[in-house]
Length: 214
Image (cartoon, rainbow, N blue to C red):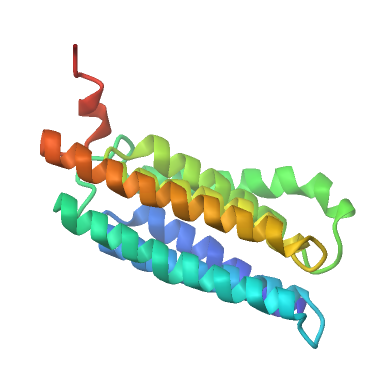
């Protein structure tokens, strides 16, 4: 099922480019749902039939946390902060896409020496995972809104999770469950922080917060 792995990794890459090109927070949250679907299916395409119960449980938990709970928390924070768009990012959207293309090439270069250490079917997963990590970092440093930076954090975590997905068939389920629980708690805390920042300062621009003095 290597071809299906490549298809969903391609979907992961395309959603990263959509995140880099989008200013609407609602569209970014919808894209995170698409990434959750891709990350749910990829481990299944790497495993042989019949799928182990442990792997099916992991996929179901992944879809529930990444595709339902986290988007719900993000939408809730978006409504509480009354923010719809990332209006003035530090790096424009066209430049972000061009930077993303360069990062994709860099991901393939970094993954090239690692291919020999991985099994068949992972040739596209490694650069796809690396590109997701780099995309998340780019979103974090190039956007002003705290909520958009949370999305960048989740994209970066999705990239890390993609590496773990390659090992999910052999690694203990508790390790992957622990990662998902950490992410859920982190986003929950970030949502509360965004709400408090917006309530106290009437905005969630992180660059303006650096101007605050005692």
